[in-house]
Image 1 (cartoon, rainbow, N blue to C red):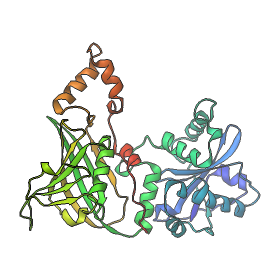
Image 2: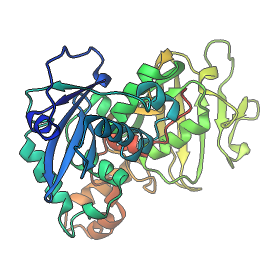
Image 3: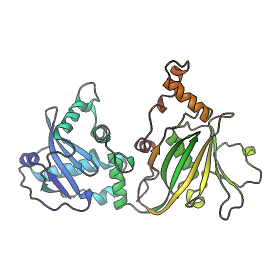
Image 4: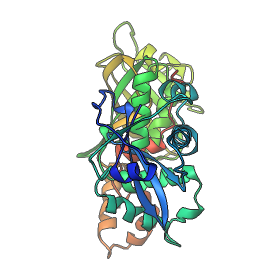
Length: 370
């Protein structure tokens, strides 16, 4: 494991670092630099390609081995991988407790952007009344820094730095499993809210339903069912029902299954199209969600579920259909509309466009991947 040290850090530690070839694996290349945080020297260690960082404040510079052990512990536990739900087995494979960092020279003064930018942002976070930086524990410090300073830039698949790191670790050290990539479209008249999500083939339709509600920010209430058209060996439309769905609304001869006993991989193949029908309350409008199976991934090593694309905004599920959604948007845009204030208050969560990154922070990840 290489730690590329800037000149300021080398001078502080009394190190003489030579230049070494950069390894092919980006997970083996950490960079380190010194900044001042409210008068306290702070070491910032970062994976440059993923911009995932840890901080060491008031670290001793007596000798290199002591700093090496502190850095390993910080990355593993105090401000690092365990704080973001990465399994201990993966951490042990990637960064054992006896890992020895090889100090190397780097001519890059800044880890990301300018050093002054990093320092300035840290100073903003530490101002009294801002985010209470000094009152944060180490894990909160890392999360705050990653979410406020490094998150605005785009990442692969629209995910945050710590999610990108977890994805890289999973791809490098996790076991492969079958997955399914789904394109999910909510039809809103002429508009379409479109999402692409990846699920494990072992996930049930109940997990898919939960992810749909999280993705569209719908309340987990009402009735719902999946409608699987007649394809391949099936000779009739099949329904996968949620809890409490009234059986009298299903044709008497139609085959039915409960959503908790039906696994996605048993019923979905590439090219299939199914429907998800969601009725928030009795007598309310039923939202129609179209689900297309884009790909079956037999050896997937990423997160699941994972949102990789987010287009278009979604309506509140208390509206009575696409027409009401258009009226809702017109009332929001027109301050003179009699319903403007009410819609502004009730529709606040839907005023801003959603993103794949925001959806991924809400989705419950499957972590049994080792």
